[in-house]
Image 1 (cartoon, helix red, strand yellow):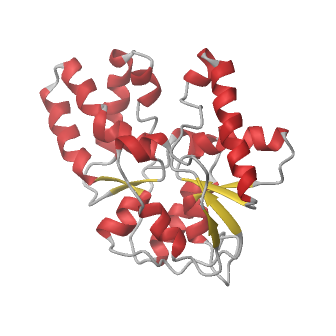
Image 2 (cartoon, one colour):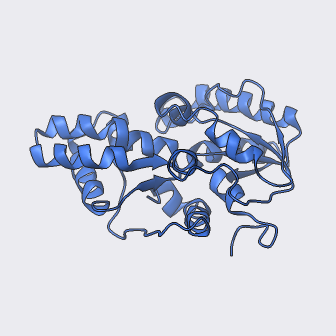
Length: 244
């Protein structure tokens, strides 16, 4: 699942996910029929409007052994919000489709660690890195230390702890629009903690959080790059940019 933000604004993340999985021997397909998972509508109370999107998602990913999502936010939506949408629609077929899709849907680090059983994915990334655990992956999916276990196994990486890492970055989708001042204040705190680490790169599993904090770091001329977890894990000694 490429996700809307990945498809439209941060294509490096889904591309890196595909390269990484193929390197690990996984047969990967990216269904053209996929659209938004419906999370923005659900989060703002438009559950009826989310029904067609959930129906499309169920159909697009039918028949696959696993659905890998480089986003804790979107994986969380499928696993925790789609049932609510199907129940509201009172659609028995949609309920069955969601019930089939949910256990097959995995956030990227979950799939690597729990399904493939790997932590060392053969990555090489000789840079000073700090990791931000995004809210949905941390609190909704409870991925725990899986992303950190993957990062610690990356050759050459200098992984430094992010102070107050479990605090929200303040993005929250439409929250950033409706509560802009609060969102910016929270993001500024996160950006300050990132700068304190001296890291060259801020890594996270959600492009939305990286967009928010990265925008603040850019305006502050902090000199810190943002990268999705998949991009770091896709990088190798022969392909340091992970673009091969």
